Amino acid sequence: MPWTKDRHQAAIYFEKEGRGVPLLFVHPPAMGHVTFRRQKNGLSKKFKVITLDLRGNGRSGNDDRPLSMALLAQDVIRVLDAARVKRAFICGYSNGGSIVQEVAIRYPDRVCGIILLGGFSEVNSFLLRNEFRAGILAAKAKQMTLISRVLAVAHERDSEKKRQLRHYIRKMSPSVLEEYYRLGLAYKSTERLECIYCPVLLLYGRRDDYVHHYRHLFHKNVTGPVEQVLVDDVGHQLPTKKASAVQQVITRFILQYH
Image 1 (cartoon, rainbow, N blue to C red):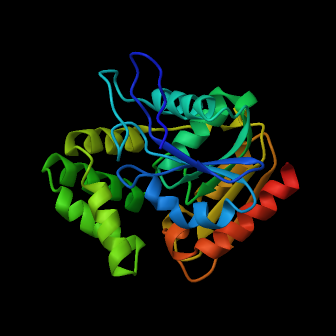
Image 2: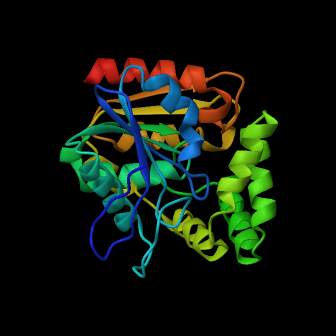
Image 3: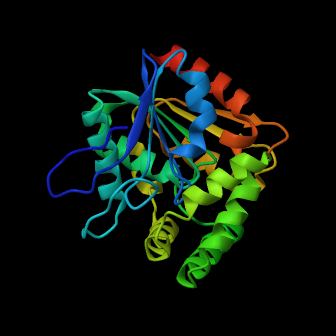
């Protein structure tokens, strides 16, 4: 169970399994590396799969530096360094995709391609904005039990997996979670998407209507090739509700561009 070991910086927990082309996953706030346990189990048979806990999440530490997308992108690079990986495909789910975009913009030489599950380059829709605001209010009120239950029910059907996810979410400080939600609400990469030269894969649930319009922003602004896939019979929760379909599409994408 390795952590990054940079002096005077937060220790970031990560796991790696398998061999081959490196593929790193970035989770949304609070959910931790367990978000991608199905992807790790399936894809590690073909690739070197790396999952992590963002700073202040799960088993990772934190430090006194102000939270920013630049800092979180740097943490991802620190994990690649600790895992002895020069370049990787990087996949982000929901707000984790914002961190992935920042990595691709700031560290293009470390990225083979990026995969965004329900991704967005800014929060510019009524429903998504209100979702972030609701999260901020709940975290500010220290309602971690409520937040953990809502996220677990939305993502898992199996009672034991729900319990495990609830437990992992409750590891997080509500004040840190509030910071993450505020950061995600304010983040905007749209005007810098032209700095993304690597291949981009967009996956959206067909029922996830309120983020579908973002795919047009990516197609319009990203410099590299952009592919999109709509997955049937699911909303936003692609990595847990449609794990097999996600794995198949990611596998095809990596084999195409590696």
